[in-house]
Every structure is written in structure tokens, then in C-alpha cells.
Image (cartoon, rainbow, N blue to C red; front, side, top):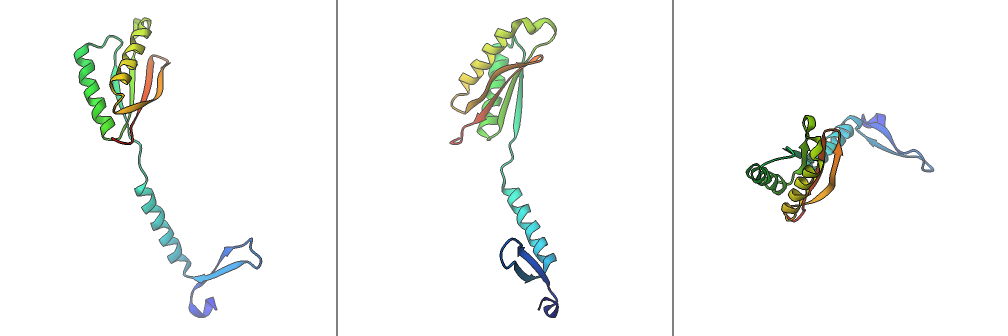
Length: 135
């Protein structure tokens, strides 16, 4: 029947008894499936991660300036990766870096929630903040 119509016989469910087959144009089917997959992929949300870098002894004005940027990133729906970078011997100020990141988390509480608490990785202390859904 498939040869008469100039189409392909496609096995849909091989495990069924008897196996289920369908007469269709297989190339057209693959093309439409690829088109559907592409449409689904374009609708999927892409997670954007924005970074903000601090020093362990960041001044109040610089902190406020960077906090304003962090608010904007969270309002736009991007994840925030805030980190304190310790250069040379400044690693002795670990507590100051942690206090700075916790202060940032507290200030940004209404815009996002902390996904990962401050954690030291090498010369960086990293903290992730995810945007709140309502914003």
C-alpha cells in the first residue's frame, strides 16, 4: 500500500503485538519533528549568570554602586554570582569578605534569595543569589 501511494511504511510501536505501522512521508515527518524541537528549544528559559566582584575591603560607595547593579540584574531575571577576590596576603581578611557577602544578601533580600551561602574556593569567596519569581 505504501509503494502504491509513493510513501514510506514507518514502524511506530515495535513492541506492540502486532507491531503498529503507519504510512507516511518519513522525510517530511523528520522535518516537522525537527521544527517542533527547535520551537520548544527557543521557548525554554535560558539562565543568565551575572557576576559582581568585590575586594575584601570594598569601600561603602563602591559597595552601594555594585549593589545597585546587582538589584538591576535580579530584577531582569538573571542569577547573580557575587564573589570576593583575595589578592596576595589579603586572604587573612576572610571574615571581612564573608561579612561583605552576607550584607549584600541581606540588602538584596527583597529581590532574590540566596542559593548558595558564601563559600571559599581557592582565592575567591563565592555566593549565588537567584531572582525571586514574583519580580
